[in-house]
Image (cartoon, rainbow, N blue to C red):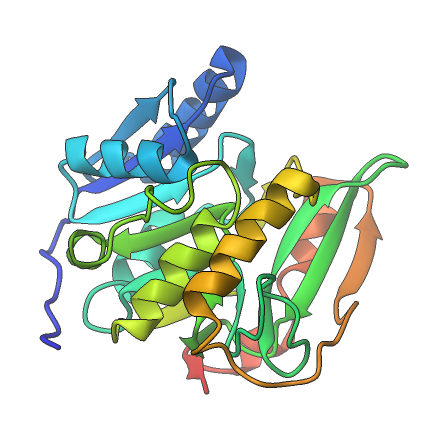
Length: 265
């Protein structure tokens, strides 16, 4: 597969599916503060039939070489988001996320557990403050990744054009992320997880009957190629913090400063 690079100042297009005007306005302002050092645009889809359909429609409308697919309730504690995205996509990787796995064994990316899961995400803590979930932070950047979580990920336009979201199969709001990233990996694209992109996600997944229906579709599509390993539940470290500053401190382990930023695996 040819390895195309990006231009010196790539346009970043952020695609957000949102039916909440307040959330959309807030996340737009946030991305503007993070990406304004270079060309960018925000493509809002407010009537998506599914996340696959909405993301495909947004990507088709977008002008950027880099396509970011984002939930509308994220906040980045890392202020250098743009430089990390630009430096890691293109010659090095074709898709990056903030949490994922190097071995996908079923319809949940974390099922294989350690040592395959990697990345970290903070969520609101029910007692106030935030909880930082850490699956793997030994390295800043993990390569050899097979699937990523859908709260946020970025890909080259070339990847999306070759392997778009499967809106025919996944006609709702679940499993779009696993299918998109795993299908890209199967097609030979290179995926990574950037553990050093610190992010807060205001909501968590809902695993109801609708989710289970999409999970069945995912297994029917990919069962022949999924990895084989014992399912490990709960392989995550959770740290409760009171402030965003403390969350960022927890999400920036001291051993990173002693190592040259690079890839593991």
